[in-house]
Image (cartoon, rainbow, N blue to C red):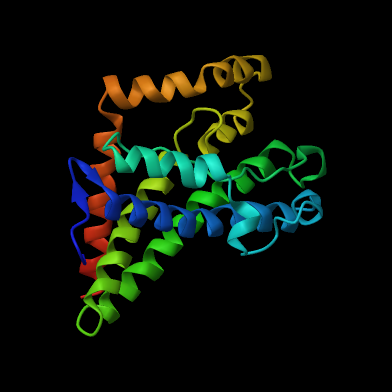
Length: 212
């Protein structure tokens, strides 16, 4: 896409695409958490200014911009996060079940957004191939984020399902202490990142196939 900005193994174009897409996808993801929590009776996201699609409200400058840029720029994979949405389980209807619903809203939004981007990619394939390529990359990345966030490892969204399944809080807290390490081991030692990438690619191809 466009001019090749790769020099000496450093791909500036690839990094810019990844960061912009990640920020684009993080916004509806975090908004979905805030919206679901509000619908279930928790006003915390609204009071903290998170019930909005303004990208600036959901950015964590280190996790959403700097780290994704550096890991993409130097070919060290892709790592990043958005600014977490605060919730009060005591205010949520359904308690821990409500907390799980709020958590699942984020990955669900990524699936919905992947469908939207797939439609955009199809509609712009002929008149604006650059836009189509950008949107197609977004489809894959959006599905990857959905799958990754469903992993039952704190602090990822899928870990809230453990609480909904009534896993003892003390066990959850211990998992949370080593959550980041567990993710690194799973991705590096068990090829988890490769599997997620393949599933995301297959999902993207299925979407494009359904769209003709």
